[in-house]
Length: 500
Image 1: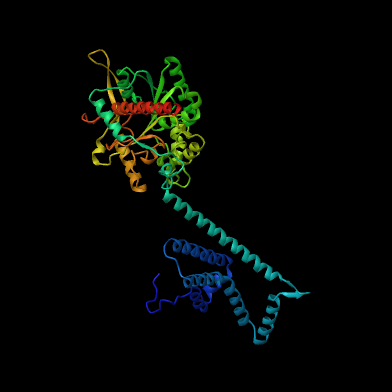
Image 2: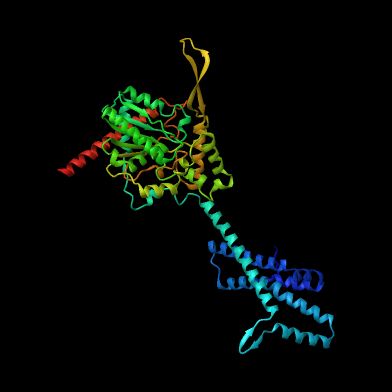
């Protein structure tokens, strides 16, 4: 609204003054003062205006006492517009309709009617006063209801804007969590030896690879890593779990896998879990450690959202962005109806669920743990990166008598780069596209933070544009397992020293 340039800064024009000016026209003021709905609307509008004024002034500039006085004055003028002006208009119409003598009589009777009678020192309200009191209570209830609605709306908007900003990295801010140990330098030394043909993984252990979410629908998940480790003479297996099942259900199945391998070979098991597979494997250690402590040599969590995932939280938490585009409903249809999974598999990755679970079931302190996280590359070159997730057999017959295989590729690198960019812009956090770096660091573990840009899918699916001068995913997994073996040997020596 444009203000009069000739008015002084301290002068304000009340809204009711405009109505007093219009009162001389006769028609419009009678309409406003005779219909109760307009009275309630004016009261509701004043309450809403006062609420928005408080919200904005609380977050920007602290108002002075004079400003509060003016605000209360305007609000009072709006509230009293209906009640005071209605009585005034009725009184004026009554005065104009009667003569001076009848006017005096009408005024005296009106005064007698409006004034409460006194009997034995007790005030008795007339029916007119009772109706006015009831009307005031109703208007007050309408105002309070409007305030609560808008206050809830403002809280919802604030919660949506904040998103998972207060949750990301909560493990590192928790003073009760043990500190991590830097292991990147030693990891790079081991990786360099592997690339030069030096392999030191002992064949006295069994390796169990635990895949992550949606791995059942990617036939090549961990396949190259298993083949590479098997060629070194290491017994390696991929856990055939339902990747879309809950964490506790998969933890039970992983426990059974470990016991089966140990009883069959009498060798301890090295466990490497990727993404949600790392969470499932860690849950197995936490829930069944008394049964597994003599059967497990250590645990590697590669790109696992140990503290929680902002992607899962923003999709499923009430009041987040997922509510506005029905992402929760879409994920429920995808997981439960299409691939016959359990929505709890995704819910178990939210920050609230991870906090609750880790409080009840922390990792055993004597378990050697290595955590590995990366940062996805955000560049135009990533758009051309294709990941081989499966292969299709063609009906034609190749010259060697084997059916021809056609690779099935998906631009996972582009998808991971887009998600990483979203997390970087919204929260200012680096990630591999799905898991932020700070949430992938397990408290008390040996942390590996490579400088090389790798997205979340690189660890398990080979890329069509892999650089031969760089280590591949199988070599990285081998280096992580070797680092875990060294950590286990160091823990055993420390334990023996304490016993001596």
